[in-house]
Length: 326
Image (tube, rainbow, N blue to C red; front, side, top):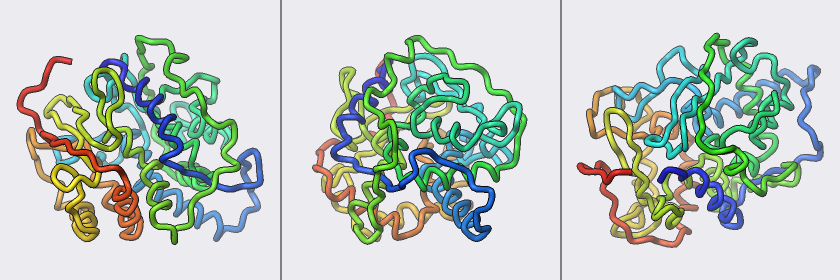
């Protein structure tokens, strides 16, 4: 389990033909345009906000989550400031990582970064100073996203409140060249985002952008198991939880779920009152407070795509009472 991320990357690359996400754009480099129409800029920011807070959920990792409440909603006032810890128990990281500060603070955040530099970090995992980002940051997914969607996310990040918060340096037990994805695209210009009218392909795009594969695919004997069949166990300080089987198996997955049942599973958390309680050891790492805010059509598109996956019969114990030593 120690090097789960390495194997996830390899498996994610192999899944490239299954999980297709893309975009089209004629420019080879992202560019800022200070003369852009204000209405267009506002639309870009709104689209970026939707993606960053409801689909790609940048703020889920780059803010502080409060696990005294169900599903760990973020703490008000910490949006984008970074500092969350990821290690072997929480994310299978060979060492310890800290989510970076992505607010526009010029000293501790990305306030001095250009659009190009942020774009490169998001889509290729290369920082402003040339450092390689550890692929817990799912840039292998974002490398397949629509270019305009990435630019919209950047436009939104520029609007975050600057927070001065210096994040500790990472501590890894393996060299980064061992885990860097081997086949990232040098350019995302030829990617094509599916039209929303193609519900299955569009749902596939959303599933990849949201990195559903990463948490819902297990590790078995040091290798990635059956995609989306669940079974990866997260060990947090106050609870242990195992990801669900979201394949369309009727007995152990979501095969018996109707579209309406799937939709209701998410939208029940649209109001804070649904998750602002202490669940104790029966908590969840699934960021329901974020994903529940996706619009109904996008959630239905995700359901439509998940229904096309091969069903896997595997019963999941969501909250194991005894966990084998890792």
